[in-house]
Image (cartoon, rainbow, N blue to C red; front, side, top):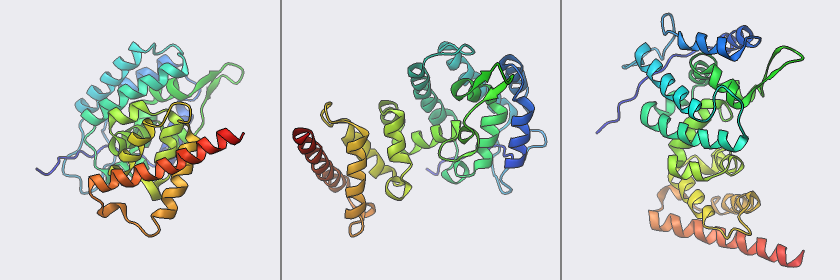
Length: 257
């Protein structure tokens, strides 16, 4: 059966910057009210979209995400550990409720709408802080505008490439090591095999260093091998072989140090 994809509203980078400027000095409760009343009236979509998301669907999605955030302490500040756990819940919601095609998810204008209109308050709660001296919000703007680092786009891609269960078991640094090497891990089956095998590494050597070393070895091997034509058993064997080499090298380094 052909999957049914929805198209979501888009705003340009210039519009996103204007939105950020407009809300930057507002308290979170006021930003929340603005987001609660977001509408698609006048919004742009992919020109040939067959199915467009409606106001009711977007508000339903927002309501579910806000409810989850409240269960983790929103709008109060919480620990980084709880915020990571919260993102694990978001992964599931996005996989269940956001029926978006990879082509749509590759368009940053879609995520501008999510990050700075529909869910701007959640974006700031997760990654921002209110600077009382400057009387405005401060946030690393990669979380607003960068495709592989923005708040909600990166959540969707983690779920799509790794799957919610695997993605929720990997730390932020571990996930970044995989997803920010698209030349290696853009193929979901390979990325999942790598993530799954990494989690079986002995705890004393399970570190992003092992993942980095394995990635270098994959780069060399894949100059002459194609993972795209491998069967599942072949892919598993290939990934296991490379990780064994990386782990062996790590153990040797630990013994010699």
